Amino acid sequence: AGKVPVFGLLKRNGKVFTVIIPDAKADTLMPIIRQKVKPDSIVYTDTFRSYNALDVSEFKHYRINHSELFANKTNHINGIENFWNQAKRHLRKFNGIPRSQFHLFLKECEWRFNNSDPKTQIKQLNQWVKKELS
Image 1 (cartoon, rainbow, N blue to C red):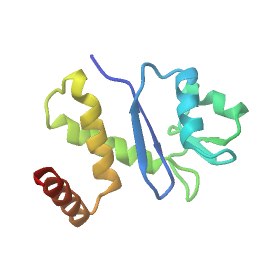
Image 2: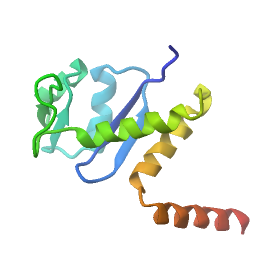
Image 3: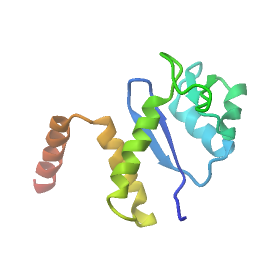
């Protein structure tokens, strides 16, 4: 129903990165992954078929099958799932977003997640306002 395809990566205990994509095919996703993830890194994904290309790549790939096992101490994708849940909850408030501006709303969600401390957010917003006014 008019959904915009997006892709996201989350470094374990780190920052999230999101991007709007034309489609979710392996040929689209792999260049993004190669640009953002160091070779020999461990990559956890769900069982989406486009991630099959990771099996023959320079990454160590582990699939998480939600129907079998949602998480254990090391093999999980809870962080990125948490991000998508937060982003969806935030974006629903707008009751529809123009496609032409969706990337801005997505990057706002990314920024909020990566700077989750309210004091940090206020400090950054104040810096931007001061810069804009000067």
